[in-house]
Length: 298
Picture 1 (cartoon, rainbow, N blue to C red):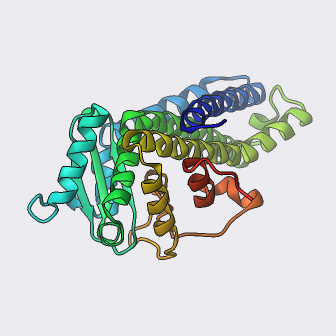
Picture 2: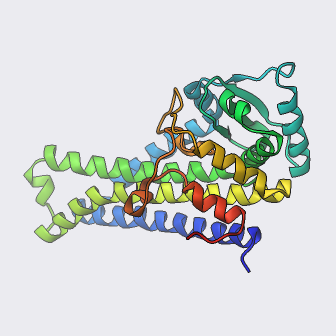
Picture 3: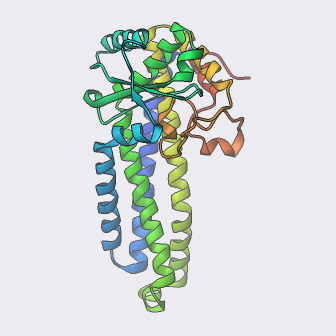
């Protein structure tokens, strides 16, 4: 019978499979473009630029995210229960106590950020604190601490780097077709190769986005499982997710760049299915609750 441990192991395997697929897309794209121009320097430049940008964003990721979300340091005097809860769960998880921030926003949500466990932040909205009871809040905090313990931020950085490489390379190639001149376009190429390169340049960023979002969804499932194992009470997180999903109110500072960090979609709950699920930053709440409670969806 499937258990939380089964879901955890399965999601780890699926995440690394998706990362491997990401690398295949990058290598394939580079190969096609190198055939067109018979020069690999464009790919090297794109890789170097993407690495430089994303390494810089990795080191200052917490400051960037906190600024984008409008989070402020929480006061221990006014949020004593929250501090005690985070401290107790951090000890249980064997993690250093993260910094605790509050986002003044009626939409219930939470996120974790920082480059590693020694430089981590857990933030919750005022709306979340208002609607959740202690067991539910504990489930949410355990979920966010699991992101830190599972090194999801490092993994997310790798994914962003790969997505950046694909997007920059594709954009550079498409621009060169328009402005590079006939001689650059035709040198050493036949028509079929050029057509394949154009198709790859158009489809690769879309594929990269789908893979990136798929990895984000898998990490949410893994953090749900890890968080439930931490509290030994999956019903708390399941109940919290249901309450959060019952509001369609978007956050005031919802941003696509940080959407994947939150425990729930910051743009509000949306009913989606079929192909539209490929472009979701988070799994459907029904699927997450079913996994936590070890139930089958109808």
